[in-house]
Image (cartoon, rainbow over all chains, first blue to last red; front, side):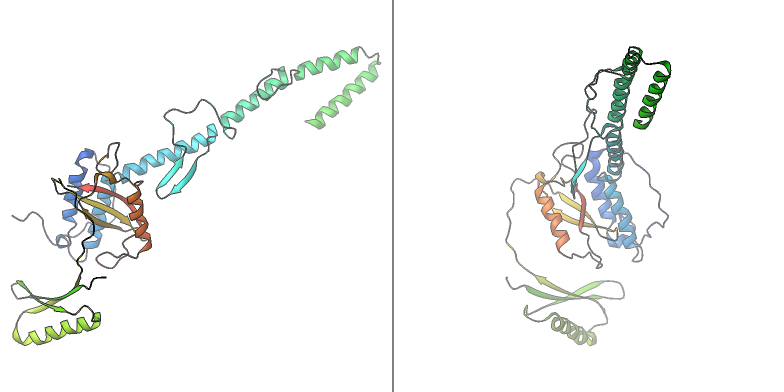
Length: 182
Length: 153
């Protein structure tokens, strides 16, 4: 009994992909089985090379080429989000083979880098809290908030002995200075 | 370098597709064109003697090499399939026999099955592909990018 047919014609394009499930420990047997079918005598002369390319792609998939691409794309998305949100910088120290440092952690780190959105939002929140309320934090340490400064200004004006017109003019000047600063 | 043994083999096929070969040898110092001319001369002289059709002329340079050493206690025939991709996105295969355990991934699901692309010997092999213009059986570039490899059983 002849095990393989001969003079087969390789399937025509267009080609569509499908993921198949297999037990990884069977990979060596699958690779060898496909290798036998790549033999030149199995195919017509015209389609021999196309058949080989199609079957080699299957072998590549068995060696995780397909799933590897999926997991790599997941990793790239993770690194994009990690850099944007957490400020973690990644660097490719080698392209062949591809080595990216640092490796993706099992859980995100508890601290955020300065370039990340989360850190920047926290900074802005700290700035506003410090500016308005005088709350001292790790970045902004002036204990006088805007409210306190305004109270101090009003108190000093009240105790200055100025006339009402002079007080109004002084407040107008302060407002103009504040607007210029802002 | 040791002089090779140059073999000329002329393949014949008859009307029933039975095949036969005529084999002779040539001096290793001869130019390839001269060796091929010698083979064609053989074909011309044999033609009046046979109704079979000459189909192939195979010229083989055979070197004897004694490098390397065998590892004992191998109890099964294993092969390694290496896949390389060329600039036209075509895949080519390189076969090796008796792959060493050390060149495979040591951990994970593919441990012992897939080559470890970070292994220094694999890296050295991949570097060689980019330095030499290897060709596959129909003359296409073999490929300079070693993608992956796996055990074949």
